Image 1 (cartoon, rainbow, N blue to C red):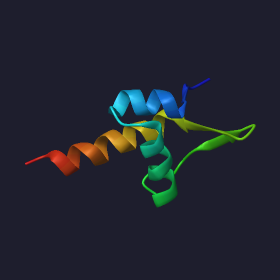
Image 2 (cartoon, rainbow, N blue to C red):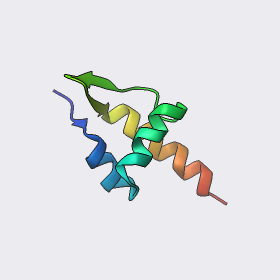
Image 3 (cartoon, helix red, strand yellow):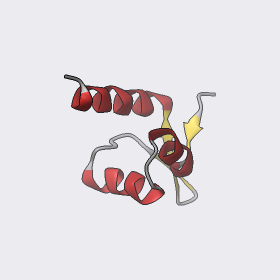
Image 4 (tube, helix red, strand yellow):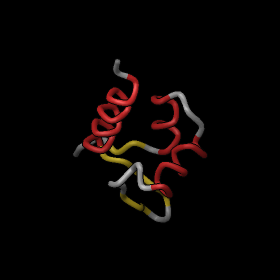
Length: 60
């Protein structure tokens, strides 16, 4: 089974707060997520997409 990231793992990886991760969900920056018993989980595919989107924002 593919890895599912928790909000805390995503926050640690991107060096942001967990609140920022939830804001990204609310604002539609994170499009794919799974709710398991009320807790959010994020697919590796979505993490890869976020990395690419962030890279494009900071590229010169």
